[in-house]
Each structure stands twice: as C-alpha cells, then as structure tokens.
Image 1: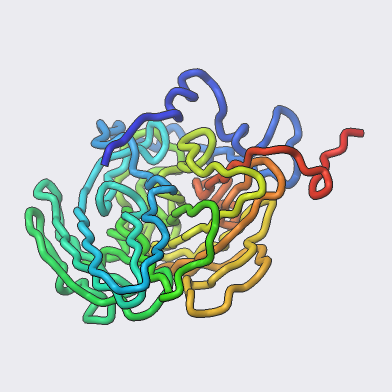
Image 2 (image 1 turned 180 degrees about the vertical axis):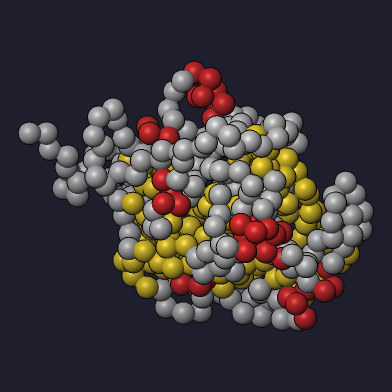
Length: 362
C-alpha cells in the first residue's frame, strides 16, 4: 500500500484549520450544537519516552477503498491476501504507537463477497513481527471462524478456504491469546456478504471502523505511547478512534468523504472494540436506512437518529444530502468525540436549498 502525506501536516505547518475549525467553532462563544475538541490537560510531571520514527505516515484506511458492488448472478472464488504488520505510526501529531494491522491499515481491507462465494484466503505474518497472529471471520462457519486454521508465527504463511452462506456485514479480527490487545491495536475489519439480489444503488460508499486504544500516556501527550493492559482491563481508553487516527477522515486531515448535494451514500461501519459499543450518529442528518448489526437479510430501520453498534459487530447505513455542509459522523458518547478522537466528516458541496435549511441573519 502506498501512503501519501499529508494534507494534515501541510495545514499544521501553515497554521490553517485545527480542531476548533473542524468543529465549526469560532473565537468567542460557540454554538451549543457544536462539539469543541479541546484536548485533555496533561500534567508536566507525566513523562513518556520520545516519539519514535514512524514506519508509515498513515494507518487510517482510505474510506473509499471498497470493491465495487457485485452485479454478477453466479458464485465465484474470491482470493484474499492478508499480511499482518506491526508498525509505528502517529495517533496524532507528536504521539506515536506501535499498531498491529492487516495490510498496514485500520480497519483492515474491506472484503466484498456474495452469498455462495468461496473465500480463498492467504495470511502471512511478516517476519519482522514480534508475535503470532491469525484471523477470525464472523462470516465463516467453522472452528473459531478460521482462527485456529490461520494461526501464523512471524515469517509463516497459511491458507484457508471457506464458503460464505449468509448475507450481512461482518467483522473479522485477530483472535490469538490477548485477543483484546490485538484488536485494540488495530486488527479488525469488515467482510461484506451481499445477498443474492445485491444491494440498492447509491452514489457513494464509505468504510469506517471504530476501536479503543489503551496506553500508558494521556490523550494528546507527546511521545511514544506503550500499550497499557491494566487500563484496558478497566475499560478506560486513552483514545477512541475512527480509522486508527485521531480525527483521521476529516477536512483537517484526510478529506476523503466528499459528495454533491442530492447524492446518496452508504456507510459500512464496523466496531472492533474490544470493549466499547458505538452510538453511531450523523450530526445534521439521520440515517435514512439502517441495517442494524449488518443484518442485510432483515428489513432496514428508517430515519434513525442514533444506532448502537456493538463491539464485534457492524452496521450498514445510508444517508442523503439535500443541503451543503460538513456532516459529522460521531459516537454520540460525546466525550469520545471531544476528548478522544472519534469523529469523521462527510462534506457535501452544492447549491443552498433554503426550503430545507435557511440560516437567516437577523
């Protein structure tokens, strides 16, 4: 995977943007509906080791990196290659962490199949890794969802074949001992099993994943953060992240969810956890349709303001954009947004629509 930098760093160097601009705030008293993203205060006596040189500039999965919707009417064999990589990257500028990933991204690659397809998986554990890895597919009927059959030590490679027999959007994740540590560090993703009739047509599809990061530092504290097992046992995360980095998919960082007014978008949203569920909400809109828990064989709920997404589960949601602006996708446990990083933004460009929304100056 090729990583490019970094609109974020250009903006920061120029002094442009920042979290207050991201939230729609200005100097003075912000509107009560906005979310201020002020960092937690860090005591000067709390120290970490210095930030480490990064192995990659970016671990955040590109939200548009999704295979095209399936139009075929017959089953096929889908070849999937997953490489487990342990990599140092920035959670936010000046804060480094050693992530665990599938193919160098969080969430892992979006795998798209159709009911009746066979997944032909090759999993490799990079020789420079420090520990064993594997993968458990919630779309797989078989022992451990394939985890036992795919356990690989550093430098090893294994293969697994399984048929997908039921539709839905399902999580996959590493499931070795200390499974919570591996998921928290970034090892989860979505495998989509489309129903035989396919999915309704939309103009855009986006892919996001939420997880918690438990470290020995405080949110925003500069330096290299080590994983903190005691903090994880207390379910007290340092960060709650969408796509692996603080405020990753936003105008100040990777502005990659862009639409036109009048268009529609489908969001595939997975929660790796390992512990917290997400109250998934679109500020300034609703979910036009939600397939809760990714259950595509069920009828969707309509016009849903906030939908719960459990750890180890997913949802499929659609939204529309009758007016222009930034539509913030958040976990409505809002301290996770304002303090810990759980925010993504869809930007809609186009003409104003005063019949729907008219900001009238007195």
